[in-house]
Image 1: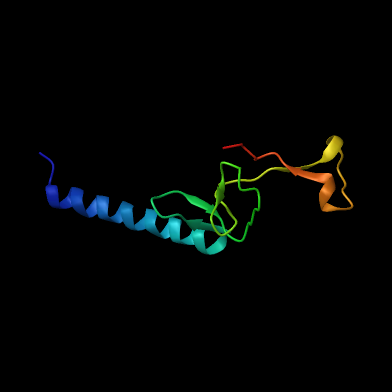
Image 2: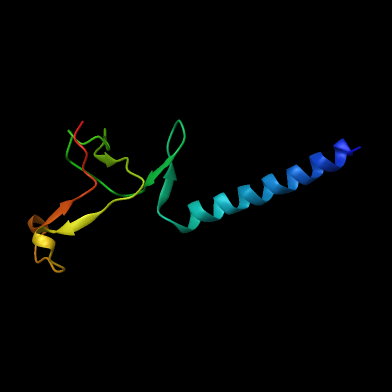
Length: 90
């Protein structure tokens, strides 16, 4: 028969390790936790209010963003030559 106290101690140790990993990730990446769960990129703004990922305050709610150069190029000389492939119309 399994010892309940031993199981609880083991699970507590696992949860402590998971909590440490999560804290490390959020301290050393650009992610923030959203209210209600999930995460989003910190400091990414967006003015496209009809995008599914747009939130009040001009925040992008996507967990990852893909931006490409128009015409499948590799170099842009101005922002108008780029586009957000993450855009998803509401």
